[in-house]
Image (cartoon, rainbow over all chains, first blue to last red; front, side, top):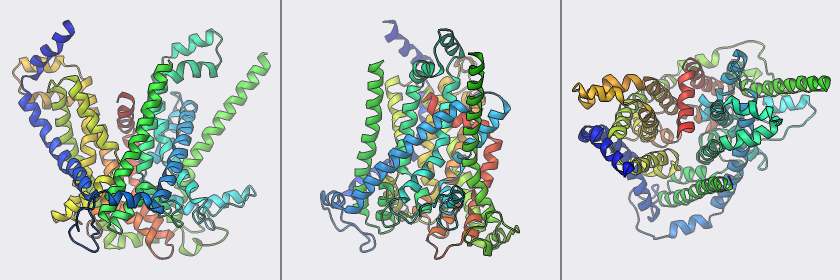
Amino acid sequence: MANAYQPARKRRRLGHDWPWMAAFVLPALLIVVVVQLYPLLFSVYLAGQDWTLTSSQTSEGFVGLENFVKVLQNDVFRRAVRNSVIITGSAVLIEMFLGTTLAYLAAGTSWSMRIVRTILIMPLVIAPVAAGTLWRMMLNSQMGLTNYLLSFAGIQGPDWLGNAGWAPVAVIIVDVWIATPFVFLVISAGLTGIPYELHESAALDGATRWQSFLRIDLPLLAPLLLLTLMFRMLESLLSLDSIYTLTLGGPGYATFTMTYYIYTLGLRSFQLGRAAAASWLFMAFAASALAFVFWLQRRWQTAQ
Amino acid sequence: MTGSGRLRKVILRVLRVLALAIAISAVLIPLAYLVLNSLKLQREMYTIPPIIIPSRITFEHFQAAFDNPRTVRFLTNSLIVTSVTTGITVVVSTLAAYGLARLGLRARYLSLIVFIFLFIRFYPRITTVIPYFLVMREFGLLDTVWAIIIGHLGITIPFVTWLMLIVFQDLPREVEEAAMVDGANPLQRFWRVALPMAAPGVASAAILTAFLSWNEFLIASSVAKRQAQVMSIAVAGFVTDRGVQWGPMAAMAVIMIVPMILFALFVQRYLIRGITLGAVKG
């Protein structure tokens, strides 16, 4: 009873000037509708149209699901799906591992650790287009710094950007370089929220560092780790900029990801209908990746 | 036991320092390499084995960049896009977040709105970019900075509204209630009471927005091809050029990222707060 009563009272207390508050919300709502909702609905319409902008200024008619079928039958699209899974899957796992490890290694309030943290988060503010450009020079097989340094260790470095097997590895390296700092930063913030006393009493009980990590830190960090995993998965799937400047999707179609494929289809060859259909397939893919993370979270909670 | 325990401790400490040194090198060496390439003479650029440290430092690539009126236009466009986007986003989103926080909505509806806003931040943006291109073409806004600005607002406003909603919901309501009793209208309460308390959050949001807008590539490249090009398109443009132009390419990348790194160092506290607030509290 009391619970049912309270929100109503609060509503009367601060909610009686709701016309003002609604007016405050209106401009934001308007922009969201015009720039996000309308294009989204427009995209549903486009996905059913036969429309290539280079051959016609208007749509050439409704074609049902043909665009979807054509995209699904397309070899480049299938390759792009595979590339996206491989690149995002490995990059995000590496980022989660490295970021979390570094968060532990660089924890502390001393000035030296503060400087270390400042340096480690630098790639976060660097434009991905610039990061791609930078690594295109680094990974150049002849003139780049990476293979030059490897040669000191007696290793003949591969043709990172010219070899179809190595180019996805190069994309993964750049994704890791750009995004590990994000995981590092968020997990570092999460670590400061773990009460020190918990570790202290665990140590008194004779627990090793590793045991107290498994029993204390991991359960406390789990929701944050999953959220970070989700953020990173989506961002990595959507990333276009660094691939654009690093490999331009090449060599051949070796680093075409789903985002890159849709981008070239829609904004280079202007096959609007196809591209819209492909982007909805991508949306379904991203949604299922998200559902997987939520499923993990559920399982984790019931396992507790 | 004590001897070997101490030895283990020393080894662990050395390993820790070593691991951090490797991580720091992995961040700094590529950046240093970029800067060195932007200062390297053209003839030292393409030798095998490569010359890493230039024998003489040259500013010719920067000079050439700034002598070109297009570079100046890219920079101006980027500055306009970033500052207008940031200004509009902060005003519109802060107001909207305050309105949402004080509208007295049921928790269920509020979390639905929050979910929609978050969804917009993270769904595949490529889906709306193609129709957005058509809408801008219809409005005759293609290749103007406004097409880029409106496109950026579509991302930043939902995101910042969500961020500021977290901030406003955390504020104590007593002060506002006191102001209400004193007869302050909602706009006065927002401006004089809530906003000053939320100021650090607003700063974080503004800084995040500025970085997002300055670095954004997808929307900018889809609606602006010539006149309205921004820095991200200029940097990406070197990829498709025939031949390799490492000097000018490196210089352009340096012009794009160095100001942002310096800015980030100054506002580091707010930047970190903005990034972690979303993840930790959300």
